[in-house]
Image 1: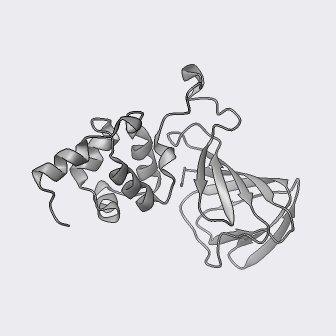
Image 2: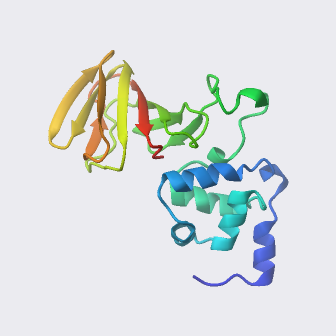
Image 3: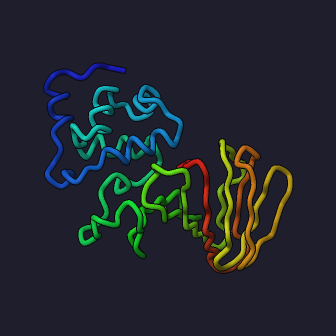
Length: 203
C-alpha cells in the first residue's frame, strides 16, 4: 500500500464538523466481532494501521472518505459508528434500545438487520431481521463460531442448516450451532420478521 505524504495524512486526520460525533469504540467492537486484526482491516479499507488505531481510540475522527472506506470494508452503513440520535437518554444507552433507534445494517434489497442490543461489547447480539418476499441470504451457506437462535415474529421463512431444510411460520423458533453451514429465505408473499440472537456477536 502506498504511503501517504504529510499533507495527505494531515487532511485525513481532520474531520469535517458533521463527523464530530464519532464513536471509535463501535469500530473497535465491530472489528473484534468480525475477527479482524488492524492489519487486515487496513488492507481491506486502504487506510493505514496508525489511522485506524487512532479512530478506534477516539484520538481522531474520520473524514467522509475514510468513514466510507471503513464502512465499505465492514459492509455496514456509515451511521453504525455514531452515537444514538439526539434526544436519546445517555443514562440508558448501554442498556436500552428504544423503538426506532436500533442501528440498521442493510445488506441488500432482499433483507435488512436492525441491531436491538445496545452494542457489541456483550456476549449476545440481538437482531431484528426483516426478509422481503422472495428475499434470501443467498444460495451460498455461511458459518462462523458460536450459537444462534431465532423466533419468527411474523410471516414465514425457510431455514437451511447443512442439508436440512425447515419451513417456519409465525410463532416457530429455532436454535443451532453457528459452525454448521446455514442460510435462509422468505418463500411467502409478505415480509417476514425474525428476532435473531447470536453469541458471540458476529456482525
